[in-house]
Length: 309
Image (cartoon, rainbow, N blue to C red; front, side, top):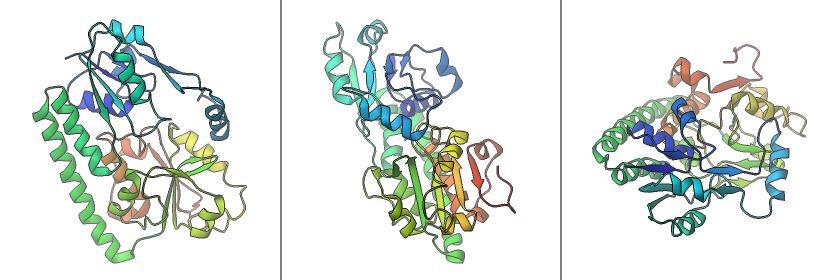
């Protein structure tokens, strides 16, 4: 089956299920083999070497669609299936645009729209993708393995919470302006043993800085969407001059974490389970040991007596 994936998370899932897409979005960058696959989208927003505030200003200035779907390239790939999303209008091509575009093609492909809003939705979508590409059995095997891993995490979390409670946890997926991460992240904080009361019940949403300082997180995780770990560190540096930063418990206790928000948290793929492990390590570090590869996604800041990784 010829599949075009218009979102990075689905591209990752397709590879995990043993199917290489014939076309991808410009944002797709994992696994490495995706670099050789034709892209069918682009954006007018320049993300490279820009701060969170500068990128936000670009997004706000766009008149029309942030992402462009190149119909000629898409049609030339003759896909049987196009996978898109409806979860976030600033993360990928809008689903309505995709549905309208395929109706103009000589041979109209099927369109699968993913719209996850919870951790369980993400796992369910892996099965939906597998069913759509005739790899149901492979998808079932993968989702079963993921669910077993989640159950193991929840078991160790229960022990950790019994010992040290649920620290107040805040996860930001943007810093200028600050956005508190929503969708599946709220559920993940609870699974990882944190107090998730600061996070929204729905989508990610803007939050005033004084709301963060008043909540006074004991654990602060900064995972800007699209930023790798080092750029996440830079984003944290943008927060240091704000009033109340030095007094926050997470800062005084050295429990501020910069996480690769490009690979972790913001992509609803099977790797979200790996993100859950990272979050568990941030909240209850004694309860989990991260692999060397996973450690590359996270750095702990502002704690002199514990080495950053």
